[in-house]
Length: 390
Image 1 (tube, rainbow, N blue to C red):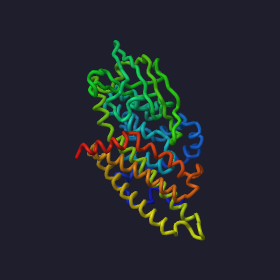
Image 2: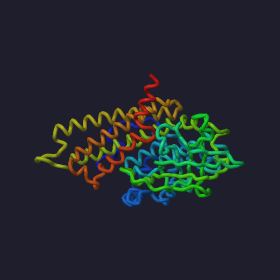
Image 3: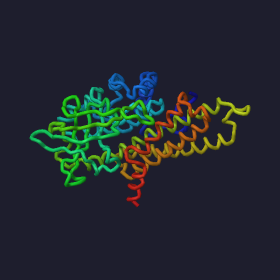
Image 4: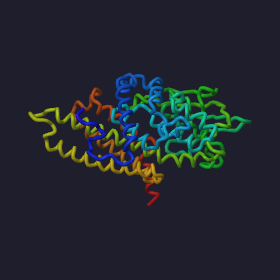
């Protein structure tokens, strides 16, 4: 590859990506290139990244980078998580689900867990001994989190949980699952609670099939079933029941920004690979880059990618400073994932027939990109949220 995807747009590093964040990016890029990429075809075939790779990532300091050191993390911020996710995207191992583990699951424990819960769970999440998932989506409730039917009923010092979830990222490997439940269905959103399930320690927990997806084949995505599953009441996140919906709303901006991280990283990789390809590939006696249409297309894509990167950098800076509002996070999620789809599609077209062949990375990117407009709240929901702010 002639150019590192991180350099394809020719932009200076933002302030949040300097110093130790840049060093972490280099370390994560090297880890993904040496440890994950050589086995990635195997992981795609098996439809999951093996547990050994999670433990290696933990040993390398790539899990829970933004968690405090006192709980086994690295004491960083979302900027550090962004560096890791960008490295994953630039190397092209997008199915390694540590982004969700790091910057979606772990923060719920940090922000809402008791001191005892944080000391018990965060160090194991940092080593990879625990692999995290969050069980929101149900067969009848996707972006509408208020429609959750999974029920948790208090029975002495335990909760008895019944229900099912689907499309759960890391679902086959996860042994630490935050479950979105209704502790009081009569109260609607105010009756929602988050309860942690350590799957190795409970009865009544069942994994369904590893779902057969269009893309992100290396990421295990599963159905989960709870049949009179009992967990201690001490596994409730928060001081009282009914806080779950508020907790979800507070954390969704980071989840949506993280989707933007994956989007801009893939955009940059797609551009890098395509520029290399059109310089080498010849048609009608000259390189494809020499055709005006190719130049115009890539000029458009690079311009839009640059706009996207500048917007993304601003969002990260605002988030690290504590000022990223939910509406702007929704804009980042919808616009960057839409742009990702457009850029990857146009780059595939510039590969011609070879772009449709699985041996070319752009084909995998084309498949992997599509879900970005769906999970984390569909882009239509993002527009609805933005529209409400007008």
